[in-house]
Length: 255
Image (cartoon, rainbow, N blue to C red; front, side):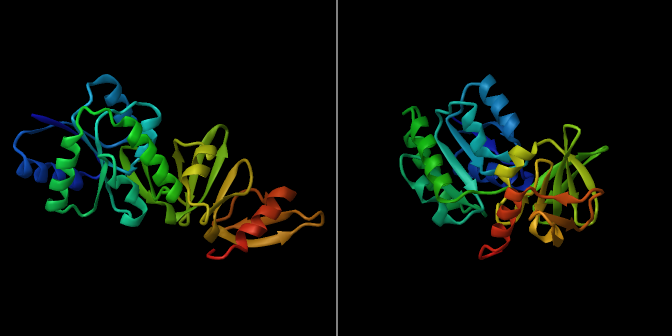
């Protein structure tokens, strides 16, 4: 029997992968299906590692790479991703493979054979090195947030977010339609997860989207004051250093 762990946050993809695996190999047993980074860390710490792990890169609560910072994984990992194959060439060596969504049966079979061939060979060092190689080639930034709101969950895409603010040790996101929600991450964490071509931290309390900047005013002492849309209750005045950084950021090509 081959034990398989699936780490994937989209239920249709879980169902499709599980069905395809059962058709490819009747000896496969799915040990667990996990949807978040935190649940995966907890499960891997409390259970024996499976023979093979299928792992999506972008999960609801962050990038699956974070799992490797908390758990030493000795199982071969097959990454399942929607990202361009040219950014993932590093995964074609040392027994670690990747699959692009939507999954194709022949490529899945090939990846599964490759993973089985290195079961028990202690490939965790190779996995960690490959992850570092990939992250050096192309940083993958957060594209969505799953927000717990009353008795339901709301999915918010980052393209719909105007800015993030920190108030009384809590972090909030505000959408372009003026909806406001609490998020779990601090601004320090968000600054690393968000695309720096789209979001800029203007102060210790605020990270703004480029599209949210409505007007920019020059103060008498060389500092910038920005007006946001939707408007914040208080004016956002940047330090002289941040003002220079913002002007440089706004003048970059591609923005």
